[in-house]
Image (cartoon, rainbow, N blue to C red; front, side, top):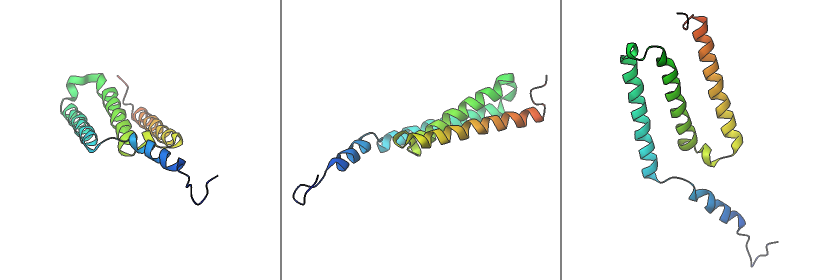
Length: 112
């Protein structure tokens, strides 16, 4: 129990621990550069679609997941937030992929 002469500091310590986990500005800049390179790879792939053949869509989906995870975990700070928020975003990612595949199946994209 805290008195007027002894303020409670347990919340301050927890607050400091949470901020120690966050990245520096330089780390965020490095991540942004990495995301730009992945985006450049995706664009380059779109110009060389014949080279990739049947691997084109799976590789693009993999790159999409990598970018999604990086943005959600670090720029949106879900890595440092409540686990429920992470689960909601993962469910959104899975739903987006399922809907995308259903749309592709509707257009007979995977027929030989």
